[in-house]
Length: 172
Length: 288
Image (cartoon, rainbow over all chains, first blue to last red; front, top):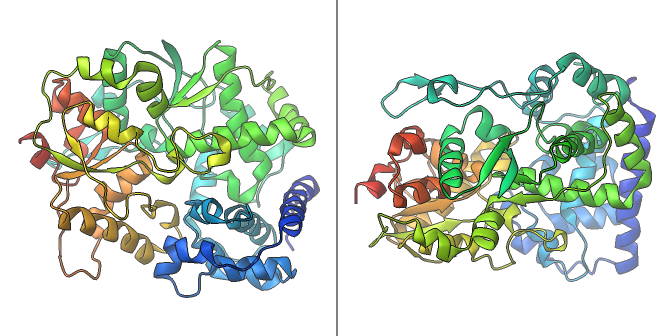
């Protein structure tokens, strides 16, 4: 486990998970498979199966799931939750598994690190880019007469909040 | 009607076609859009993974900044809209979470009261302004055009959060029809564009987008109209990378954002609508 894990954060994630599992136990997944049959990712990737994922979580077999790339392939479209006759949400379960996998230091798509770093640096998931037009010219926000992206007024203070108070994420 | 305008990271930093056309058309429809000084990413695409509390803090912070201006938020991003709704619900039922968020907010002298509302652009266009008034603004009716619509998952899911449209979304269709064009249903209309999976599995993502675009092409439609910046980027900008199993090669399906289409019908210059940034052959639509 990572030494920078913040206890408050872990307690919060655990609370979300136990709430969800509590809701699941109250309703009980019938393993009808409507979630998997409606899932657009299951059509493309053989190993991705929300029904089996819920079965494993119900049985407490979480550790293997946290190391499985499958939890990162969900598109978060929410079709599974929409179709479930018992109001179970594989979507929410998968997002919590991602939180836990990240916290436990298992592998995750590195693109997320870029987003997190950029938010700390400028407040957004990237700096405003100069964009190519159809005739190959490059144009910035200023060229288009768009106002500058404001971003947090006091960036230092904003970063202190994001990093210091909540101690979110790993140190990069 | 005056709103605190929250475009979301994607429109702010790279999808300038969405941003330009939204600003241009909404203001001509009589809306006053005020920038939110000091706003940031809502956290849904960034901190939701690493720190759910930071995600809640970031979304709440943007709501509070608008609340301080005495304004409701208007967002043009489906994901930000979902984030606002999820965080509002989480904070209302979890006092411990709210105290963590308030503690973080207090560093900048802020506090969360949940006094203002957040609206997606579809709600403002369809429910507040209304399709009849929008059709009054049309000077160039888009006759003889048949479109597939791509509302985007988070315009209507999850139902429990009171999303802008119903499980069988029709509002975007009604807004397109108000401009004189026709909309046609296709089997993949309610499917995900694949955008959120791009960071982890590019191949499968492109396959999802491909399936949608092939369906539109085989249906003989004139293009796809979407209202979500994420769907827009996926279907428009990534279309060149889509090489699915259909054997079509380059698909060349025009993809246009709704406020761009609205602007065309209102007779606005294509440059002001950012149509020079569309990667798909959108000129097939506006030259007709």
